[in-house]
Length: 217
Image (cartoon, rainbow, N blue to C red):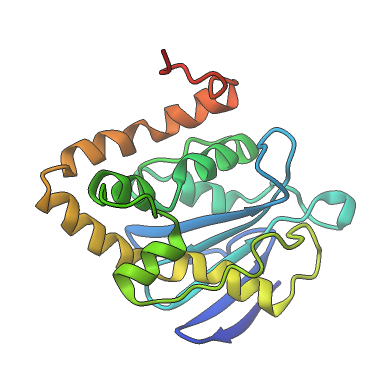
């Protein structure tokens, strides 16, 4: 089932269970997730947001069988996220990659992360959140009002869908700004090495090597 909703700056397509057959989102896809919490082992993956950077956002709602859904049986979505020819553009990819790899049983690669890019280039500030970056670099004021709402509900509100869509709607434009900064500061190659490591970093987190961090003293 697919439904469509319009929002300022974009169109939201909500798909239940999986992406539709034949949908093409191009070589670089912005990706985000909404979950029931921050523990990939405990908390359910509820929603995956995707955009080709063209003003259209595709939301895939994953509903457990107990609530009438198919759980994580989403072959089209899984195929796209694991496709080595498709770059997945994320903000704080470390969490999203871990959640997707754990719940869908795939390796999510290649990946780019706007938060890592911001930390490597914007060393004059500690404000690297998506809301801060969109405001400062794009002049876009994101609302975070729905950030802690119940994403496990079978029926999501229009406000929830608009919030979820906004998290990927601007990632392509944000990456363009940050990539230019990476090249200007001579850190693009270093950033790419960090991005290449993200799937392994996520596996380490899932194995419990985040506390303590294996790279800590």
